[in-house]
Image 1 (cartoon, rainbow, N blue to C red):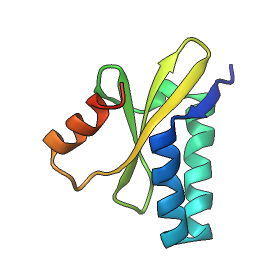
Image 2 (image 1 turned 135 degrees about the vertical axis):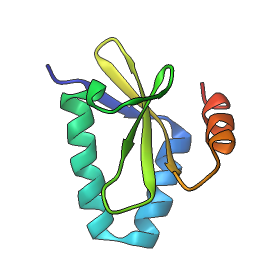
Image 3 (image 1 turned 90 degrees about the vertical axis):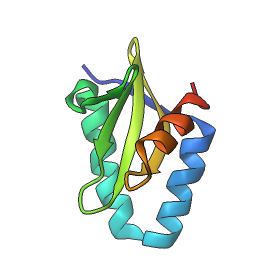
Image 4 (image 1 turned 90 degrees about the horizontal axis):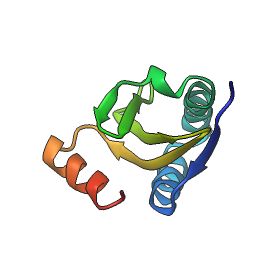
Length: 95
């Protein structure tokens, strides 16, 4: 089954900022991650319920998403070098 993937505004802004700084190579890796999420959203481990976190290969960033029915909402694209407390705070403000 294929899921619809939707970005919340904050996640879209974070992605666009990273893309503008990292270029097309980042875009292609990110797009592959979205394909994985679209087809297998549960393949990413749960970070903190209800959020899954998928590491973007060869980067320190992760895609944080939540599954609701047949839709997946991308809540954040965050630097995983941040403290767990800052990540949790950022996710809490978006739920």
